[in-house]
Image (cartoon, rainbow, N blue to C red; front, side):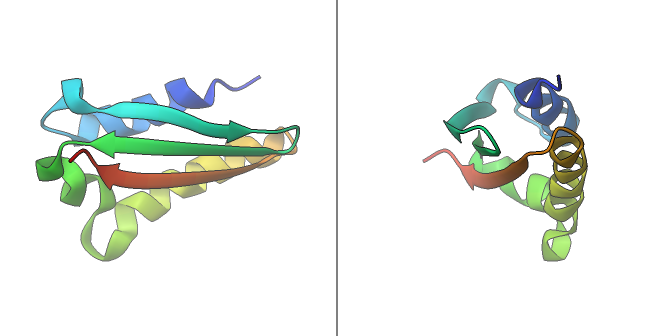
Length: 82
């Protein structure tokens, strides 16, 4: 079984300048759906989302692949702490 919190952390932490500010919250979990929210320092938001959202899309693609392997759907919100 994939530990999605750990996977998200491994994907996000190398991108940010303030790793201590990263917070991963499991919003909801059901038998076939997972929802997470990642909160980062406002200065790191652009690094995690990327130009045109390309980095966020890549992170979500990795998560979707892992979730589909387990027969689940996953949703990831990325926001800044404020």
